[in-house]
Image 1 (cartoon, one colour):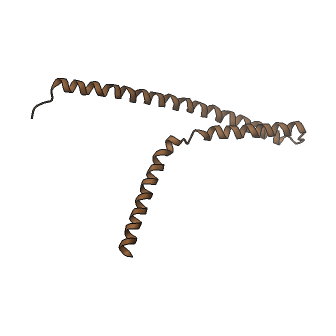
Image 2 (cartoon, rainbow, N blue to C red):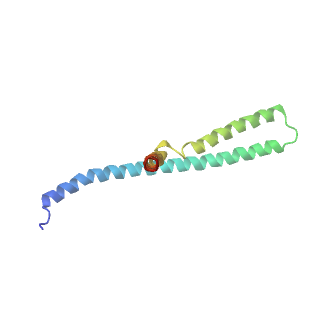
Image 3 (spheres, rainbow, N blue to C red):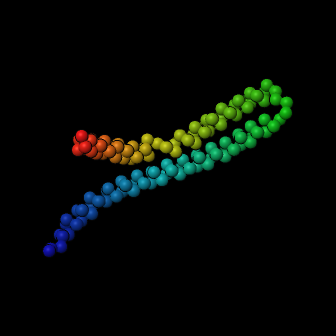
Length: 122
């Protein structure tokens, strides 16, 4: 068996380098996006804790005036917004794409196997 020619080997290497560079750039972008999301989650969690603490302080205040009730409503709205922000990017369509297609594939196989078994039995 002859060893591969040097020109073929170098051309294969040249073809793989742009793919590798593109994949590496994609991984770097994904890592940067993950770091940004991580920092956003940390900031949102800290802010949520601060709002909850303030909310508890206002609730513990015995005489609740109209101003305190308005502030409590605003705090509740802020907490709801923070909850949505914290949950919004934990699941993305991209992360659900693979499990979705696996469910479709295996569910489809189950239906086909069921039809085959039904035709064999009946």
